[in-house]
Length: 158
View: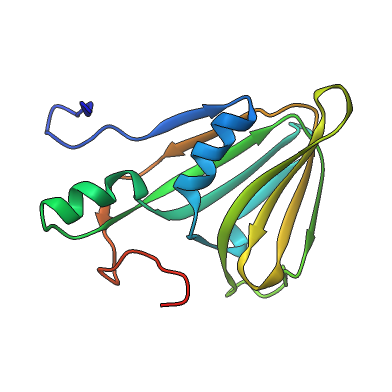
């Protein structure tokens, strides 16, 4: 697969839009094991928008990193959800600004007339539920990739 690059040779930031369940599965895979401080999520009711700044493992680069024997990378990304009518959370202490959350999955539960609930499933039985009028999501990298501090790919039960 060809990779678009900046003039200095660095890869272009990832930018993906989601409008259906198939697109959502791709983005859910890319944000699996992303981490973020509780302070980096924001709901703007007047704009009907929920945003989340997260630190994600670059799953799309894992095979190349292994094949070329180079370190794994992470990147800062913005997950932006539009057409949000309501936001609720469970299992999250929003008053503890030191809390770091780990995103496990994105799940869409369709409702009537294209509406539904987007659930951001978190490690430790936490969740953020967004009542949405449609699937209208963007995932955009907002930094250049950097070395994963652990130098390991995330694992479950390692």
